[in-house]
Length: 160
Image 1 (cartoon, rainbow, N blue to C red):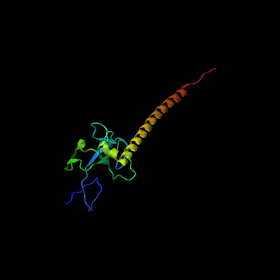
Image 2: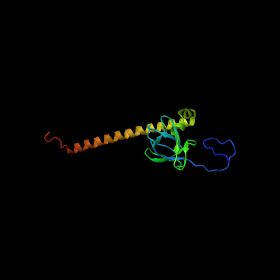
Image 3: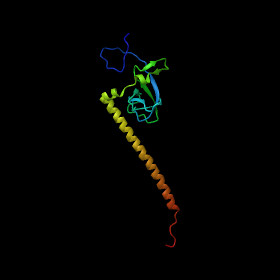
Image 4: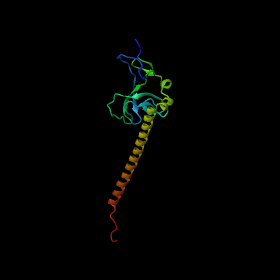
């Protein structure tokens, strides 16, 4: 029986088959989309995933989420681990995180992956900026309310 190899373009005739896919529960650090390539975003944190600044990706966000889905920061999601990275499998598995992760060179050489990574980073920066403006606006509203309460307490000048 010929071994099924995923993650490559098929160059020969193939028949239907079934495979095991390792999945990893993770928490989104940024807005993510089905099929987004992700890695760990903080050294030593093996839960938080997103576009890895070191470009060391190990899998993709659940590609079977409904079309148009967006995973928000903080939401939990399955990451489908890249083929040939699992080093032990018994439905309780380990993968060679440091040895087999995708390198930044591979991302840079793939124009579609690079564009997606760049756009994801841009979206995250926009989200962070909007969040910052939102916090500033909340502070201004608190100040305005406090100021209005002070105005209500002021009785004005009598006899002016």
